Length: 428
Image 1 (cartoon, helix red, strand yellow):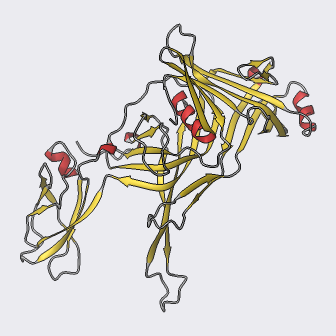
Image 2: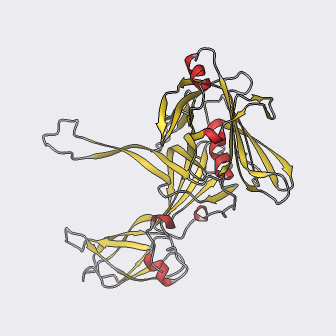
């Protein structure tokens, strides 16, 4: 079967166990997750040229790899509790878990004051299966949670130190120009069948003895086992002089290339969501308050950690960064509701003294029938200030578009989040 380069044939897996040391890959508690198209992590290489030097020529003559970091986005327009708990747990830094019923767990997420955030490992496959990559030293820089038309959506912005492993290789083998078989130095070629192995040899090229140009040497077959023997369709030349064959191929995959299993969870529905303002949080539940879900036109929460990824003079000779730390955390809320009265306008007129609390309750299906526990989350912000609340028109309705700032409330550092699912541990 030919390789498939459609994006939706790709795959992403996260490892819920935090890395013990930044950039040291975690291998426990992994899960493959379904993400929206466009999700994934890319290497960000810093490449410099020599045009800023006196060289007697106009164009660049050299390139230098100055270093690398990583970045990307993971999104679920139909967010599930596993991803929500993982992303918000990594963003805020602390997750405490307790079993509340057989096979059902409650996770409490609270902000950590530490500048170092939990780092995690991500595995991704491009297409089926062009290449696989393992990125370690990843952190959640920001997130956006939004009530969509039918579902709760979540996206998280990732930054990483840029430590990356790949399953592809370039190898140079010396052999006579008239060779019809090339033996790799030690590797086998990935593939359970002859056709799969042949397809995993991407390119072989060489310069014939005395020649200045490359010739592509198509492979005819690839043996199993290691080292693999690659049979060419025809030799490059007629002489027995040694030349260099440059081979691009997928070697027999290491263990890290194996994807963990997926977890079946209910997505979080808009119709099962509730937004309560001006309630009182006791530490375990929200008392009182006003349900404004019927007047709600739009609601989203944005968070940003303002991460700094730095290279250090640590003698490591690694191209990736060595340190990642957050600066000041930011949390804002956008609240759009119908303009039925002047309460919110009056509150916006008095930002010095007026505060409102927000309680977003989101749910999916029952985790276990008749258990009374549902896939879902409670996001509680005990104290928010109104930055702005202009009056606008939404369709045919008068609306007010509130920009709110999540503020410290002394007791809970401004945020208290609970989630429920079948996962027994995060960031362990």
